[in-house]
Length: 353
Image (cartoon, rainbow, N blue to C red; front, side, top):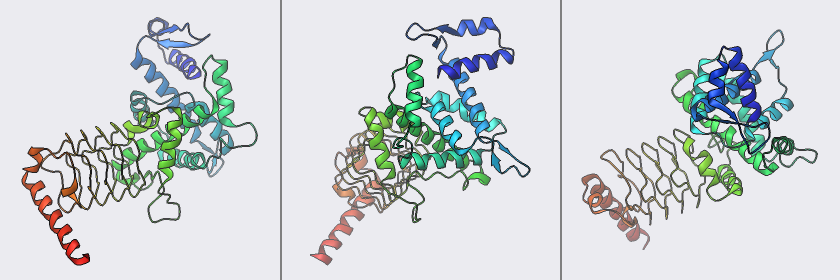
């Protein structure tokens, strides 16, 4: 981070930023030698985002007559990713600035996505942390220690991978708004369903790895960036996604048995055919959510938010959900779905004894 800031300061001076302005916003920190802290948080986040954007743009550049060879080799790319993202978690503000800068720039977003996605797959397989020689996480950890920042290689590895995942989610979300980029920027965290690359527990394992930083570390880092994501058919058994932003996410067919979704934003989410048995949906926002075919056996709906567009019809075992408010029980669409659920269960019991 310190390297970003110093370079950002130099770049901004070259762009004409007044030294007085820089002095107003920046000051030396006392916690670590030669470190810098910002008086104005938003300004600091913008400078950080600008440096990251320029670095990412460079990582997509190609050379040669046919411009098929990357200026930065795969090996060098891997180190630069750790150097960029190994210091800690990206904030929502930095990511917002970063995406705006990337879209405005001349960077090839498809190339960026492909390179980051390749890194993500290798990271998930443990390629970097399990290297037998000096590892990239170790190298970055040593660098941070020289700056007075205590961070071990596991911490560096986790933050790097999660930050790359965040960028892939954001590129995916941007791609959804661009007809020509929807397929090219489509991010499947577990691989595309029904393909050879699909691993339903890949994201589950990643969540578990992220928890090595502390209870709730994964959702605190990545949870704000799930909106609009494609998590279809993923295995989330027992995961903790408290307060996660899953609005407009595709969770169709996802296994959410026993998941902790307290306070999660599931508005406009596709939960069709998802298994929400024993899931805790208390205080979750289900406005405009599609629950058709979802299994709600013993799901906790205490204080869950909903609206007239919440699709309850065709859900399974809705009559077994707990914590249903009086107001919801009296809502016509919920009543119809409840009657249907009981009828299906009765028919099943008669047929199979």
